[in-house]
Image 1 (cartoon, rainbow, N blue to C red):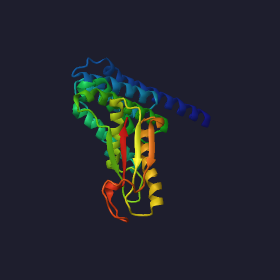
Image 2: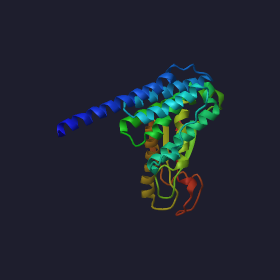
Image 3: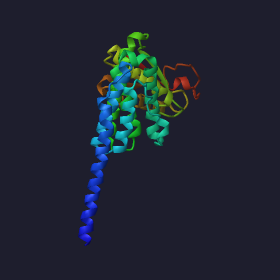
Image 4: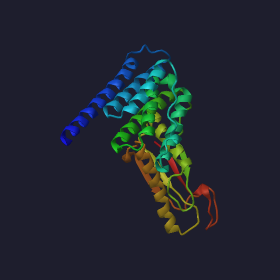
Length: 277
């Protein structure tokens, strides 16, 4: 009898699964075949959200398949569907920092003309961002795919926007906290600009020179200045810059931006100078 009950339970699960997947397809099929309206951007959003809905369905994440299908329906009706809010997903600070930076870049592109300059790439960037935000706790390979798709699409949008903007600079500065070499939030924004400028200018080399203030021993400061340049290099590599294109060096407490006596903590001397070639 127990074997019979087990068999019936298995049949019931399979039947419910079939009903569920049939229901999902019944919801998605009208969205696939709908007559879209609106701008080139909203129609591209419709296609991209449908692509993500199908990917979630193939991965058996049926609730997300419905969620993205609904976004596709709204976009297909001409609505400029907003991207996900990265602060609403409960992710840890280590993930939230990157998502916040990505969101800022995404919104700048959306509000700066990306929807008309490169509507298809703008839609890919937004949908890949949504995938990054909502799937942050999924397996690493899935998130890496969304992340790569996002940065590639965003780079395409930003390249399309460059002719509408002033030519990017070739020289940049980032600053560091005292006795630290980690990249601060304000520095990360500058380094993101460096990545975009390299692509826009077709720069083949970026030179990073680290410096310190005059507090501490000169020998230690030399090591710290190199660490600062190395931290900036690591950040650029994570954003797709070829490691072979990045030159690093350190000058310790030499060549002060703000002349001070020995032993003075001065933020503007705790820096990395960045030059594109």
